[in-house]
Length: 152
Image (cartoon, rainbow, N blue to C red):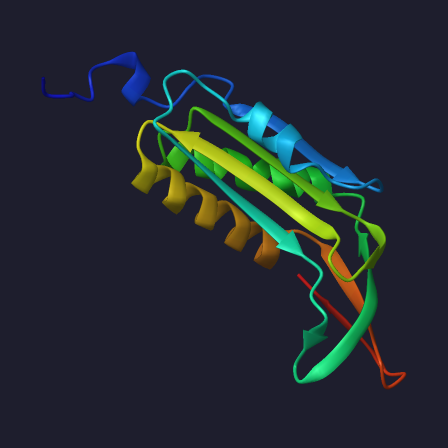
């Protein structure tokens, strides 16, 4: 049987944006995975960003994220662009703010689409655009006592 793009399951869903949020509490991969579940999706792609123990050749002890009050609205704007560009069945994105330790989850995004390739592409577009455009700033604290601000 040959699949066609005429089937409703091959199209993006109405109201595909299921979850957008900025959180001060720990993030859940399971929450994002559940939010993007869709019976018409043949592919679900998740990206989980964690706090690593190094950056730019220096050891990182911890970091803090802060954001502009418009950050959540900017996340939604980017999500809307991804939904318009890809046949997204469901999309979710959450970002943490506050003090985080090495290994903590900083961001979790997920996208479901009819096929895996579309899901991978849409998820990559979502996380790349969030990282570049959303006003969230990272304050890294290094083992040598120095610190650095990084952000969109």
